[in-house]
Length: 322
Image (cartoon, rainbow, N blue to C red; front, side):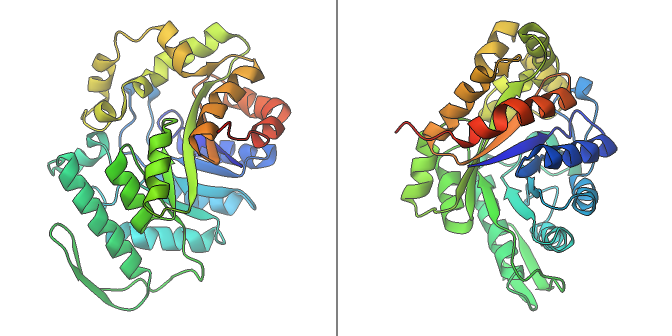
């Protein structure tokens, strides 16, 4: 079991994210994960720095902890040739500590370049082509690829690591889970859905299963839930909504009726370690073995201290019930 810390790039600026990553390494986390967004989910989160710059700085300021994008979309805002080069470079400057989380994206971040965000079936076809391009470029040499949606012409990445980064593919449904099995090295999800893992394994996937566990630490449950309600209620909308809304204002409108009680149903809130272990157990039972603690509480340092003193050992001891 590996335990990660989610760097909330929508809620903190770049220097603060670097500081939290250093603290997470000292607290014993195995990896830090950071989304690759252009916008935050809600305006009151207030941030969205460039993930690749922040990770480069973290790589230089840390020694042991792994870095995971959670996740990069390589089909619209980025061309796959660009992120293939970026991932290879980050693998080099981090001495092999980078894992490349990828997905088919959200309208929230991809529409900003003025291109239409396509329906999910076309996104999956584009995503498959993007992964094929990345794999091709990582073989070295000059490469050409002509796809229906994406192409490269005489492209070569000159600086490649000896060990290429694992590609962890995000899936919200069976088609993406099959793509993860075919073209990825692991599965990434945001809900404890055993069917995703079963589909991935049934299609031949043998890599690790990464999942985000929603938590909110504060000295009392009410303060934790209120903080999560204020900045993270978007997480309750579900993937079909999260992938389609275009701007933070739309997420604010879509979540106006979310209540504190709804947050308490979805997040482990407050100071009781048992709540956190119960939340994590759902993901372990579903078949995930890389758990990302996604803290929506008001005090990141308090949560990191809480993790080190109360959660590190017990989380690692969790085993599937089935």
